[in-house]
Image (cartoon, rainbow, N blue to C red; front, side, top):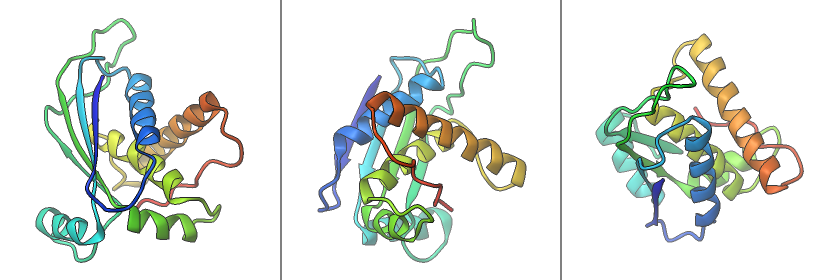
Length: 165
């Protein structure tokens, strides 16, 4: 799996954890190991510009996903997954910091960025949360991936509760 993490935010973030959880999520979703993903970490101003440009919404947001080849997880266990460019995930540590503080189970900016990375990966794979049934599926899968990764890493304590909108 080729995953690039580029921190342009000026904020120190755990880039290795972002890389690790993205790799874990893609493997768990059975995405071809030669597929490519880019994760970009930006400041609130850059995120606000993207949010306005692409969503026509004011203010910065936590995560945005820009799919390229519209790859999807294989529907059958014996099906060969397609290879390609997944796209870009853009994260904002300033928004992640506030969301971590406001969450029912308060957590760090890095834990929120890990959750947002998984959220972004799922969006790249076609998952959405506009409708209640879609939200239940996506957030359930997101929690399972984060919990699985945390267990594999031996991390203790409660997993971050979903705070993404």
